[in-house]
Structures are given as C-alpha cells and as structure tokens.
Figure 1 (cartoon, rainbow, N blue to C red):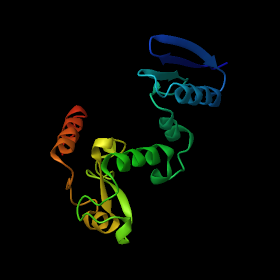
Figure 2: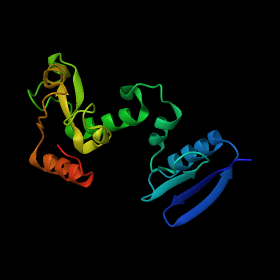
Figure 3: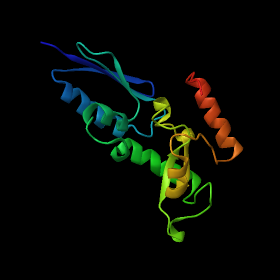
Figure 4: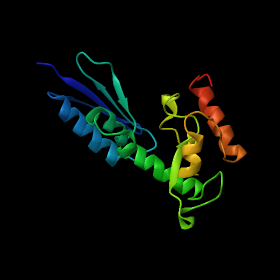
Length: 166
C-alpha cells in the first residue's frame, strides 16, 4: 500500500500523518492551511510516491495541484493577490490616473509579464494598477513600472532574490 506522508507545521508545533489517498492528503493540507492562515509560520510538506516533495505555505497554492484546468486569472490565488494589489495601490491607473469613474476598466498588471517571467506571476511586488487601455498598450512587450521608488526597489530586491536575469 502506498502512503502519502504529510508533515504539518504551525509555529513550533509539528504533526505528522499518513494518508492512503492523495486527495485525503490534499484536503487535510487545505483545511490546515486555512485554519492557520494567520500563524506566522505554517507549512505543510507532502511526500508521495513517484512525485517530488511538495511544500505548501498557503491554501491558495493548492489550486495549482487540484485544478490545473482553471485559467490563471480565475484562480483563487490570483484573485486574492489581485485584491491585495488593489487594496495597496488603489483603483486609479498609475499611468494616466483614470479610474472606473472615468468609464475605464481597471486591470492589475504584471510589471514583468507572466509570459516572460513566470516566477514573478504571484509576486505582489510585480503588480501595478493600470486602466485597460494603458495595460493593452503596454502589453507584454514593454517593461515599465509606474509605481513609486519604494515599490520599484522592492521589485528589484525580489528579482535579485530569485536570481532572475532581466
């Protein structure tokens, strides 16, 4: 019988369990991470036969495993991150300063596009707010950061941490 070994860590507490089915291990992982969302250190490690070791720090990371057919911009992980970006930066285009009140659609844009820098697709530091017109004009060809210097510095630091060549 193949078993899926799962280690749950919340703060300094560590619990280990085994599951017969992968779905059971993933469901337990999801419940644990949702319950410990505000715990500073909450990590789940899953060791399964014939698969690399998987580490999860947030329940939204499970979407990548459980729902591969969901388009990126419809995933809960993206929608949660999108909301954080709108909350942090506001709902005005950082390029032309228009908003929904001016009749434009507001988008959350990847400064470094997902198509060329997939490691940055879930990084808040790589997001800015643009109206749809500016976003379509920028496309994935131009790398232009319209945010303040502190935000640009945070993104440069993240790029350095990930050892990306830009």
